Length: 251
Image (cartoon, rainbow, N blue to C red; front, side, top):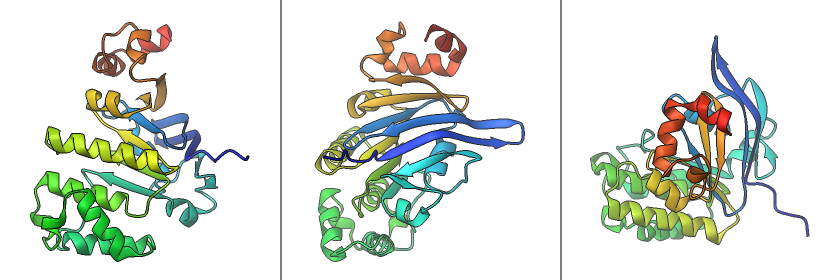
C-alpha cells in the first residue's frame, strides 16, 4: 500500500524583512493523526511561519506541501484542505453563530451544510447561541464558535494559534478533548501553538521549539525537558527564551 502523504511538509522555509530574519530555514512535518506543538517566545517566528503555511505571506525561499499538494503551485487545492483558528482572528460580529457557520461552510463547499452546522452547534455546546450575534458573545463563547468554524470542512491540516487562551479550565479541557477526538477519527493533523505548557504536554505528540527564526529543539514534550536537564516543559520554554545559545550548544 502507498503510505498516506504527510499532512504538512515544510522545507527550508525563509522570510526576511530588511536585515531582520523572521524565519531562517525552518523544516518540519505533521503526520496523519498527529498534533504537533509549535512553541517559542514572542518574536521567535511562529506567527510568520503560520502565515506562510496559510498562504497569507509568500516565503522568500522554501516550500510548503499540504496533504501532498504544493501550496505555491496549487494554492486553492492546498488551502481547501486547511482551516485555522486564533484568538486574534474573530469571526464577523454582526452575524449570528449560525450565519457565520453557514457563511464559512459555503466558502469551503461543505456538503449537507445544514446538517454539519447542527452537528457543530451540539459538539461545541452552542445551541443556545445559534441566533446570537457573535459580537455580543463572551471571549470564551467566541472562541468556541471559531473552533467550530475551524473544523467545519473536516480539514486535513488544522492550525490552532492559542486556541484555548480565553477559555475557563473546564471548557479548555473539553476543547482539548474535542480536538484530540477530531485528530484521531480522520487522517488529518494539527499544528498547535500555545504558551500553556501543561496544555501542550497533555495534547501534543511532538513539539518544536522555535528561537530566532530557527528550530532549536524537537521531541516528545514529556521527555524533552529531562533530555536537556530541565524539570518541566515550562522550565525548558523559559530556557529557550533566555538561553537559546546554551541549549543549542548542549544539543
